Length: 255
Image (tube, rainbow, N blue to C red; front, top):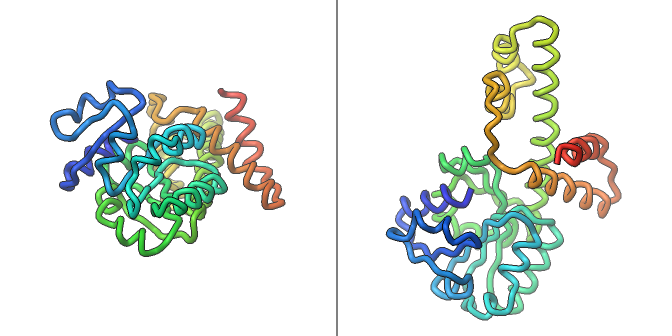
């Protein structure tokens, strides 16, 4: 998702200083942006630092290493658009605050399609003033909503992933049920799209199922990671989420 997001930021007129763990992914931007071989040099040139990484562990290893932290100027704003545990986001906010660095946890929903179309839903946790300050960034990527304090953006993303993970299974089972029973799945999807079962999942993934298009977008292990984080957060809150548990187990079996 990072590549189309970078493209949209460039098209919006922002000056970018880029680093990626896989250096080859920077090749498309070497003529339009400044590219670096180390994260600490990249962040030293920026007053807004955006991370878009796979897991909380990766964010920790990249953003929270001393060399990078020491290279971020006081007063800068760090925007982590990765999907990480809420408690980890709160910890990052606290550690950055000690260095007079502002922080937003701002995970996104919309997938690679939303990233390419600049239509991402951005769920921001942190100070409202920082969300407003970052609006020129967010508006180039999609639409931002201030959810609440630090960590609340990640809570909203967990809610999103619970709905997405469970609904993908529901849509696939529903279309399979209809097709095996002799109904035209194209007509079934069309009928459902006008009723109470309408959803973005039915619209996009339902069409892919009908077309037999199983070209992957995000990796299954990432969805599994999110489902595991949902269950971990539920346990911290003393909750039992049976549908999320079954969905997690399905992704675990798949992976």
